[in-house]
Image (cartoon, rainbow, N blue to C red; front, top):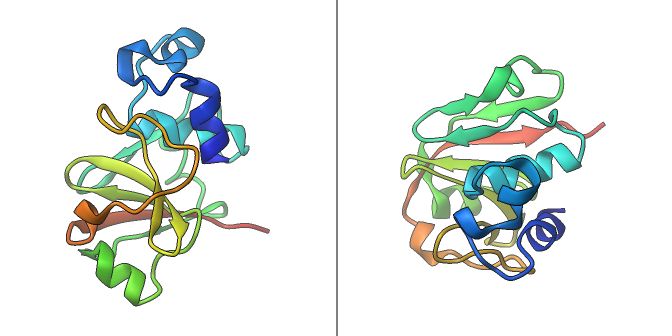
Length: 144
């Protein structure tokens, strides 16, 4: 879904103020907006809800924290490499760093991410620069 979201809202690979997201939603797109839009399109959160991360989770209107029946929130405080090796990360996890940065884990060490330099990529990719960064928050949707 994230690849479809990225392609749909940023057909030319442009980022931030030039993105189609700005035209559709009237606001700039960044890593958190990209992930939040995909979460909305999957029916996980409402249209005007969203999240972003630094050392803690920030969720507009409590769209995550007020719904423990829908989401599991983890605070591993381990590096990305440690979380992958220990099997803590699962495909579909929304991950927050202290940078701040928000990404979605695709599995097998690959990520969906969106930013001013990377734009969007149709396929998930390796972000080696994040292997040693600390993951502060993981939001996991509880599939039924």
